[in-house]
Image 1 (tube, rainbow, N blue to C red):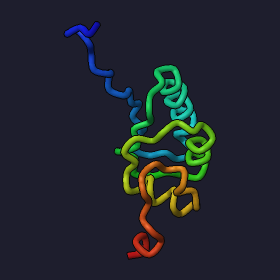
Image 2: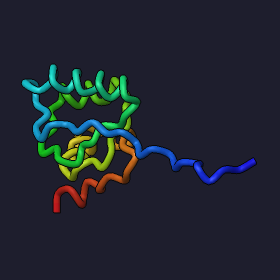
Image 3: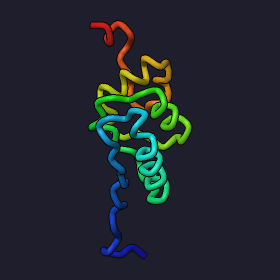
Length: 98
């Protein structure tokens, strides 16, 4: 029996990452990841302008999906050779050097 009160699924929750993910932001990043895990949320990387190696390692180790990775996030993943961990296509190395 179907009812008219069926609801659409709730939009996926997102936790927004800071614009700069350098070594000074590691503790903040860990806290945001814990928050995302508690809420079963994706990490919104759309505003990230810099990703350092340590924060990249933390992101890879946790495995939470990144939503709308910025161009800088895609570049960082490509430069570190881990583009396959992004759900969206990453520019080729020839596109990065153009």
